[in-house]
Length: 290
Image 1: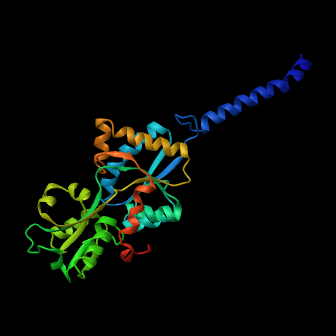
Image 2 (image 1 turned 60 degrees about the horizontal axis):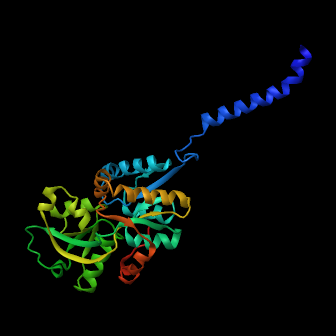
Image 3 (image 1 turned 90 degrees about the vertical axis):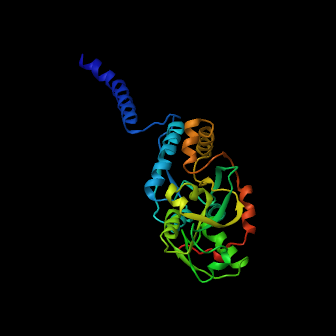
């Protein structure tokens, strides 16, 4: 009896060890719907709005991506556009929603490439004043304070400042107020004579804010903000993310989520769509992040 037990114990121990290993693996490894271990991917969003609004807009979209891909996506808040750009150009986001000029820089510095964007609504800057302002042309802003979200906001700052100098030959006093929403509020309250934004964010403002403003000037248009990916993200996941976002645009519920960004007509995009931005001449106003 004792002899038989001694002879069988090595096999039994091996079998027992395999069972223990399998139990440990099943209890400690989180397996995704696609069969791999769950990873966390960090998502950055240029802070055109306040943090609470960005969270409301993007969390349902990230949840849809999690359901589709099995990966985990974490929204990384950044208090200012400058802070966002610092992190972007350091390659700290796996995915990021950014302005087109930031894409050019991030592509050069970190290799980010665009996945999707709004393919029909192009980006243009809008210069707004109070509805009852006596100012009727941008030339009348010479020497006055103009609010902008940040120095490097493309449509809301760079393009407007370039046009004010190169087309209207005036000098203004820029006031940087961190978000697009703050720009519009500054103008409504009379803190600034005018303010720079983009049509998409102006359309997203509360009705009372929009009713109190008038568009004084509109810049030329460029391709819209892309949702982009860092080259360190597995290509298969990048494809899944693109496919999921495109699929959202084909359902009523998904389209309602994308409209909040706002993206009205989502489509696949590439770096070729953004090469023309190198010719718009905003480099003279671009400031390196601090």
